[in-house]
Image (cartoon, rainbow, N blue to C red; front, side, top):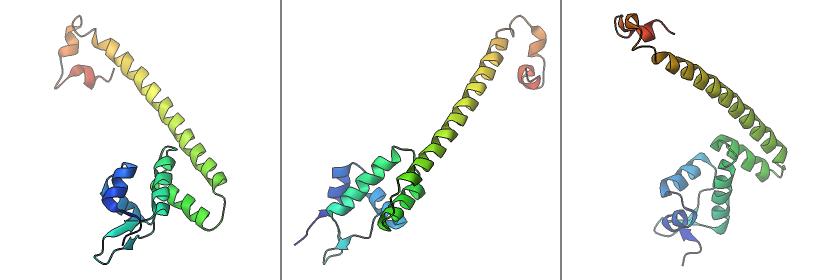
Length: 138
């Protein structure tokens, strides 16, 4: 008699594909589950809780490697909150940097787009091997 959930039941309950459950197992994010006599995987409530933790941790922008690190610290009895704080701060800083880069790119692209309006009134802009406008790097 089974105690727990088959992989299909677990994946449906949590809302992730069965391949994801297997992948997390392969990465060591969850322990290999018990198996029935016919080798079907049986997942415990603990496995379900671990998978829910992983899904919630991903909302913090953490990579699977970072999530694994947090799990390992916790398994060793070490409170991982300071590590989490550092990880999230790093992701936040990187995101802010990317936002600034995207804003600068948007502004540059908008400037170039405005110059495209001059094409119709500037016949020499049409002269070039492919596109003079791009070749001149306005």
